Length: 234
Image (cartoon, rainbow, N blue to C red; front, side, top):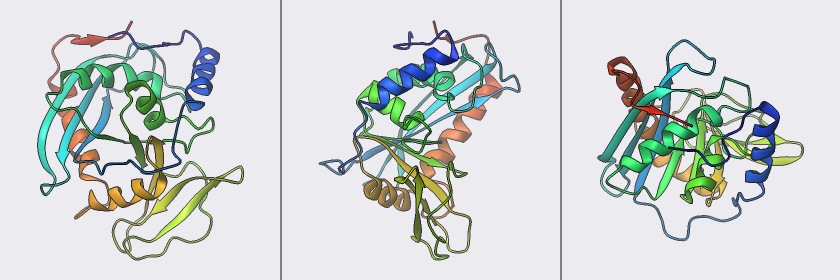
């Protein structure tokens, strides 16, 4: 699949992010609560340069039915963009779009292992993917992009704002009492409060959302089992 606006240089990628950021909308919740929520993730071989092998996975859960899996898909191939801090989406978007095209169920919401507007140019993976697909999206990261404004309460559900340049860009959210928080940021067509609430619904037993855990497992299994290049961006 051809990715809209695939960059040839780092500067071109930055300009694409700035343009996409102008289209991001995170000022209100989804008008209809989502039912089919998809986790997306990409696994890599050791090479971080362009041409490194990778696998993408999307796993769709039913939020109305005890988080049962209703659809999943994977694809494998190579990355056409090297790893550059702040530009990770350009490695992952092409294969994730290819995987989304395979799904039998269209997700109502995408949950990314990464950031939304908690990004230097307010266009992390969740924002980038949300704008390109038109599907609401948010990110749940394992580490913080910026510091929290105050301490995060130890109890499940406790949160503290992530602030960058005087702007609230996310929330450190405790999904398990006494366990390190995750870092939630709205990506597109959803607001931060709703993203945080859905994150808690997706974490009944573990620190990370079930969407992330299952997509991570599926992408790793696909990478281990790949035979040749099933996908390559152009």
